[in-house]
Amino acid sequence: MPLPDTSAAECFDIIRELSPYKSFMEDDRRVPKHLRETLKTELSSAVKLLKDGPLILGEDHTQPAARALLAELIFNGQVKNLFLELGSLELDMFDNRPGTHGKHVSDHLRGMAEKSQPLSDSPLWIGEVAPFLEMLDDRHKNTIGMVEVIEIATTSGVKVHWVDNAIESSPSSSRGMRNRNKVMAATIIERGGKDAGSVLLVGAAHTKSDRSGGAPMQGILGLDDDRVKDLSSLGRKGSSAVG
Image 1 (spheres, rainbow, N blue to C red):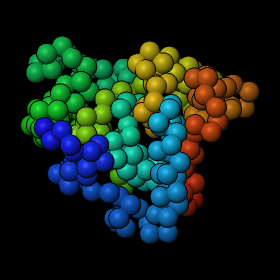
Image 2: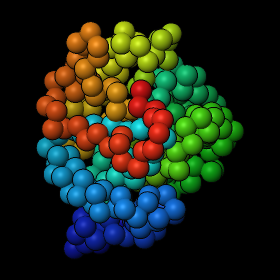
Image 3: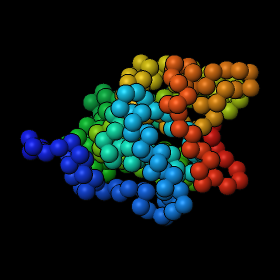
């Protein structure tokens, strides 16, 4: 419990010191040195945006830039809700398992973090959820995996939501992307995702108009394009994964 005269900034400094996770901006194994200055500039504008509304981070799923920026925003106490492009129906299969007391799995994991219990103490996380996510991480080979993103968020008291539509049979087609965006947007709105401090991390393709003129994610949410940061090209060489 912080002392009454401890400022918010000082509290966040204390949290960062105690956290097992460190800034990716200072770790050249995760984020190439030539990208760090760019990300620091993006961080400054992202902080301003989150003070009065949401932020959409568009990523290449194989590259760490957007996730490094997200982690820095979390470390600085700017993020309240995190919405991830993960199949909601796939991950909801972990809900209401023994030990979660009927809570959504992200509530269960965040509750552990609030009690200073590491996720490694959760049989649900270690035995089922993390291995499932590691399969996705293995597919994209991102140096900052989704397992680590969720661990950083829950450890910092951020509420995590998975909002993708796992039913769509052709997820990368124009129709598939449009349907996924509609389903994701409905869940985001329902869970307060247009409020200040909310971040959506998605493949950058979700923020583009499709070939048939379908609205991108920000359009469906009723947000201006300036609330989107497309970091998908940072560090990318050759093939990409932005859907």
